[in-house]
Length: 258
Length: 249
Image 1: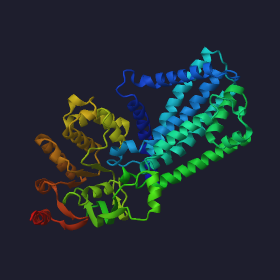
Image 2: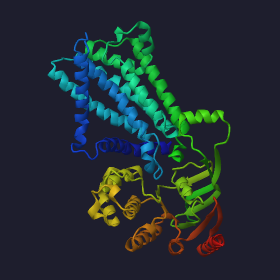
Image 3: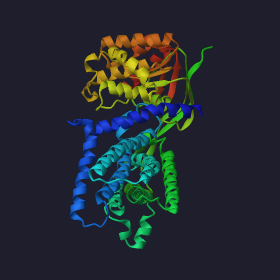
Image 4: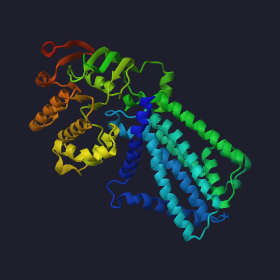
């Protein structure tokens, strides 16, 4: 027991150290440096915003906010899992030279993604002011929604980080899944425009559930239906459990594959 | 009777040598249908038992590939042994041939922070020691230089300085002394003597018999994964030299 406590105590410092180095290395050799972490999402959101709001005819109220909210939420999963995916394989020199708990890179990737999420939400705030959109009070429920999202990413990240060391194809497969997920998630369209049987299938995805929840609390000022909340919590903990089991199975020997 | 800082009992380790390494999912699916063995196992360590006492320095000699580095990795918990048990006291810090897990894109100072945090030092303590680490390594001019611009000798010096400042109970050194210049080698030897005086243990892997004679109280000759002989330094070195000369013929 004491060793686990000691490890977690040590881990506290490492987690944030990794999370911040990840961000810094991401923008290495750039003139703007860490400023890119604000400029990059701003420009990305700007491009998608222009594309989707001018090229698509849509009947969604406050479409810019709707679109940005979906993009930001989806980016959270995309960034977290993408960073976690290579978090072990990119640290081979570190892992073969010093011992530290193997779960730390995956968890710190989720912290990096959370920092990026906060920056993007601040940008969303700026857009809300600029577009004179007053969010309903239910917007505070974004906090528990993103917390659930965080747990979900940790589950995925733990599994993906070790699997990508074993099987290099995971990186490509995951890229395709993220691409497909972008179109299968109601980011730039309304979910109820889809045929009902398609909706029923897509509702199985925790990401679709979480994005829909953010629409509820930010766009419509309503709470998501209770069965949707229960399903989301359940499915996320299943993902976390599976991710942890995969991680536990491979973590001890992963260093020999690096 | 002095306490043991390291107790190793019957430790074995096998590695898989892949003939054609299967790293993609497709290969491992087709490979599992096609039942030909695609790897053989290599017994890297075979039933290793020894211990190290407080204030003692143990030298390890052996050919390249005999399992010395694997043993150090097991002692520092980077590898898990397949069999056997391992008990260590306090902190064990390894300085393996390639450094201390430095990141090429980070500066010397940032790397000191990262490695020290991983070795369990608090940020406050690191801040106090950074200057000493840089000074000891003789890298004052390069504190803010990225590690990718360091020579291998400079990286090694930095790694050794960090490890020493962390002040571990057990220090594992793999071919470290040979990399530095003469002045740094002298500094290393002084530090290691001081370590021993303060009751710390050192395990030193070296191909240079004079380093082992100079510092070690006992020595161990590892041959093809098992302990050929462990005991007094002159006897072990004799046996090692004899073995190496038979290989030459």
